[in-house]
Image 1: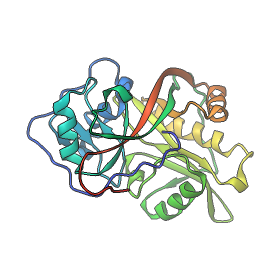
Image 2 (image 1 turned 135 degrees about the vertical axis):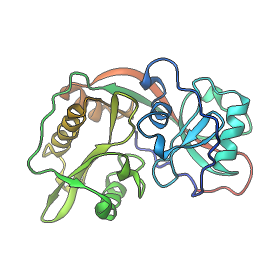
Image 3 (image 1 turned 60 degrees about the vertical axis):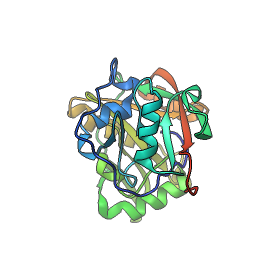
Length: 253
């Protein structure tokens, strides 16, 4: 996802007995929903037809393809009054009583022809590495990365003199697809091709599992888009990332 610090409040999700319907069409048309109804179902909190990851895993929620008033009410109840949340959709769909804090044009790129390959210097990152990963994300700002985001998939990093200077990993997993995310390099080590190497290495693991890699980035990040296109990614569609505040309550960051 793009460089947008979106956070949601802590809180246990509501889980209802009846399942949300699977999204129609292509899994990447609504990838958060496809992932939470598929390989990431064990993370899903649900109320009615809306779903979310735990607040310390991912800030993005999943609405139906065409959310109605009931879906927005369920989302408000799931998150709590005053909560701030990230979503992908059209500003025109946002109810008048919700606050639209920010909208960011983005692109969705698919890597069905991406060139992949392992990297001898890349190491697997896990929960013990999270403090270092969070520190790198704070400096490089690749987009939302939270204390438990590492649980979503395989993350790889490169260290120099024992210090984590670059990383990339897997986030959303719609059926048959895996999103590459948190691609970032410390400013002191940019220009060395580390991001390219890590993207290829993470994508290699995705391919070995039988999935196809994809990713999102800001439409304005032309440098990153050019890098991804050189690796074999191609534009699938344009999207809009929204930052919203739930009506009522005390405002939370």
